[in-house]
Length: 265
Image 1 (cartoon, rainbow, N blue to C red):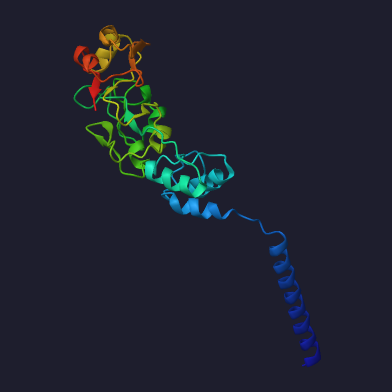
Image 2: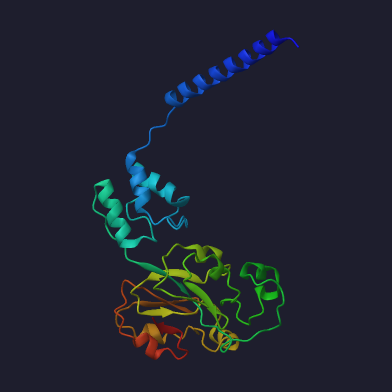
């Protein structure tokens, strides 16, 4: 055995390893990306849900955007007022608080108020129903299909399907927006937390057609609009719509609605 050749090989490998180590050490110093120390502080102040409700890829993405001035200190919908104040203190600015918003399902078409045109035995996923007749077995083609895609994606356990319709617990809702994105019929919208009256229907069919498919759907009769002294209600495409900025929560619209499509929350 030639020990000299072995020693030479070991020396060469050691030299290469030493060179690579020195090169990587120098490179790490030369190309080091300086990060603002405030970014870590902001990240620690965020709730850490990484839900994406802010529009950025997780809490780390939002923290970087806030420090760069690309996002406001109150951009986190989950953290709410407490997080906005904490982040504002780190950034040295006063947090202008946004009105709290929550998700609301614009439908009451449960098993008692609507019926099925056929029996569906496929996958329990609302998005899969886009590939079946009438986009689902329920007679109303605008209402909640009740297969819980929104319930499955909610990270806060704030939405559940009860008697065939998804219902949001506004106390648990953090307005992350995941349920809105997954609903194929776009039945879920963000409404003010303190809104007292909401239109719980999404049907845009004429009154007789809506009544045929759902006994509690909005028929676009306009009685709510006619009796609203605040001018907070409009009727478009046979469907009532409330302007929450104008609404004074008098309740007349709900009282006058013959189908009780306007509900108090």
